[in-house]
Image (cartoon, rainbow, N blue to C red; front, side, top):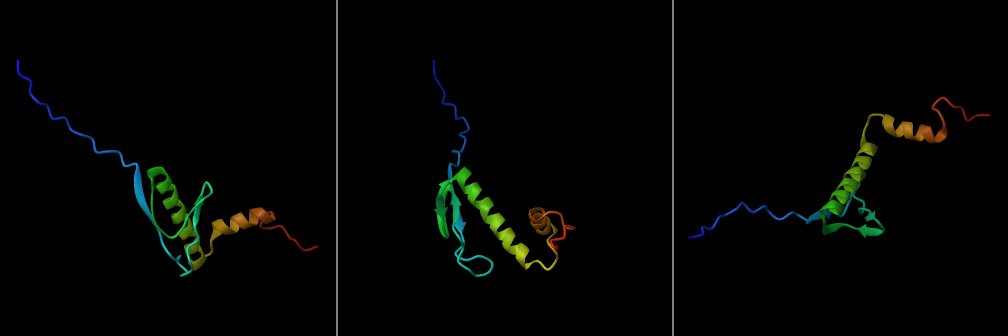
Length: 97
């Protein structure tokens, strides 16, 4: 009785870590603020993080960049105005007495 070797496809190892790069400066050429997750700051530079944590850091980078871009947009930012108006009351509320 002879046994033949069977080559099964080998699944690539699951990526458990990956690199995330935080730029030195933001869109305004100011030093980039650290991204803090669970009390741990991740400052400018390249970090080797677990995949889930790396995804969170990348999402926070996108949000930070989007917030900077909103400042530079020439059109009115209705979403930001609505947030501010909710904090003050309705947009038609008069504060004059």
